Image: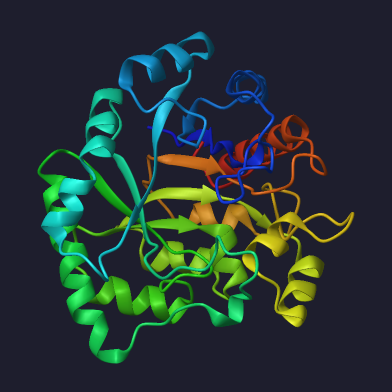
Length: 299
């Protein structure tokens, strides 16, 4: 099955800073996503969280539900408590016919704090990796029993950010914990997304496709900006992230490193929609992914 191209609505409406794109109706997002050529959407803050209403919202645009982010706090809770707290999300995904259960540890994350520079992001101590991985592995097994696939999202401003973080986490977790490969977060953290794809290709079950503007990234690092300041851009400048084909990520190499992958490629480029027209950028991202998939032999 060829890779399907979907979108996260964060290019239209930001989930970490709700006023960014807050005036954009969900219908506008879905209509423009359809026009751009997307086949499915991840959930965002404006999407209904009841299956009947969500199906009704997606149906006019023939759009699949691809899954969505679920924050976990396994540094503070055990797996059974986390599983119980995730019931509404589990039930919604099951009702929508998607197995993609995206998680990230947010109990001490700073990516949503505009006043906090990324240099102050949290780290796990050496003795903390094994028990944390054990709780995550148990949580993943419980999800798997319901037909759901835990896709762990490495993310700037969290405990799983760097290449070393990803390696320690994946080595410590059981095979039931899969990796969401995010090309933008990997590149920002200094990792090579194609190398990550090669190394973890058998455990990569979801791919977020965003690109990096190197000049803006260099400025953000030099100024020790917060995650939100960096992605939104200061003044009239665009932000660190953009869509595939508008930055430095080599998507042909990434997809060549994923032979046999049959999941989704999700365009997820957080930008300020007042600076970066969502429809125009969405079309650019879809066109580039189609080209890259064809070049990689995965179209």
